[in-house]
Amino acid sequence: MKTTDLILILSSVALSATAQLLLKLGATAPAVRAAMASDGALAGRAVALMTSPTLVGGLAIYALSAAFWIVVLSRVELSLAYPFVGLGFVLTFLIGTVFLGETANAARLAGTLLIMAGAVLVARSA
Image: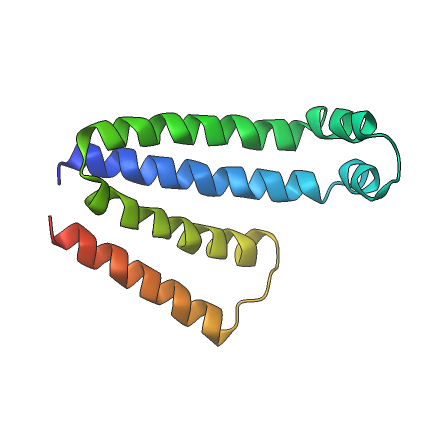
């Protein structure tokens, strides 16, 4: 695999994980939580979602990630590229535990390490 292809793949995955963090932060913001929990009109909920900077930012970063991924798919075999998406699980695990204080138990850590090992094996097969 070419270095530039690997950089594109890892960039797409990193952008996707970053988008997840922003979406989580946006989804747990008080205004968004209140709007989602209300019995109010759908339009009111939509406005709360569309005016949340973190949600909008997360979606924008997802779009950028998708653009990178389209470039990857134009250059790399799908069966080689797609396993790297699993690294998104690794990054979101790290983001969740480090930045959000989420639980990092042995089972989650073991599963994350297995995903990493799989991505390394696929990368070495190219």
